[in-house]
Length: 168
Ligand code: RP5
Image 1 (cartoon, rainbow, N blue to C red):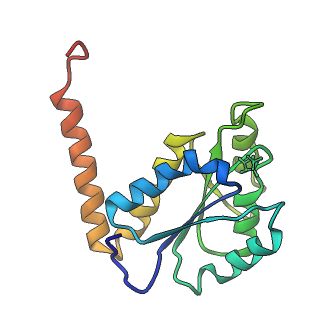
Image 2 (image 1 turned 45 degrees about the vertical axis):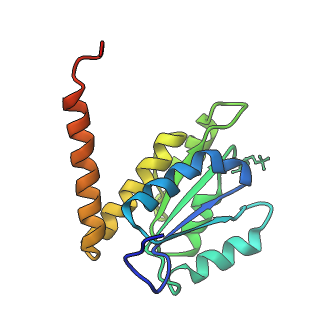
């Protein structure tokens, strides 16, 4: 992976289960494309609570500047991480089978005042946007990331303009 910081990851992508990877891979792919150093871990709030606390408590000291946390169902992972670290937590509601991710969304977005979690769209769009948001947060201190983000957005705009007629 190309890195802007050889000392370690700037963004941690965590998820409650390996089953969340189908969704969260979209965050990893965006960070990879933008050259943002990152790591990926399964950290479960209810299956590995001690690991969750350890991960959150060590995050700032290890150099993480954002944590993208995806979870489904009773999705307390992002909120619990945010409770244990001042590193900004970007929550991604994973689309659950039973309730299509509405349960995940409400679990993550409805944080009581005092401990914020930035909450993104349900599913792969949310995962991708969380990565783009993390890159934007890092851009001021990491010019190469800012340039990669600007180039991505320009390509996206050009692509829409170049294919304005939906029949072709
Ligand atoms: C949550 O429960 C995970 O984030 C996942 O979205 C959901 C289901 O997990 P598995 O039963 O597939 O491991 O903890």
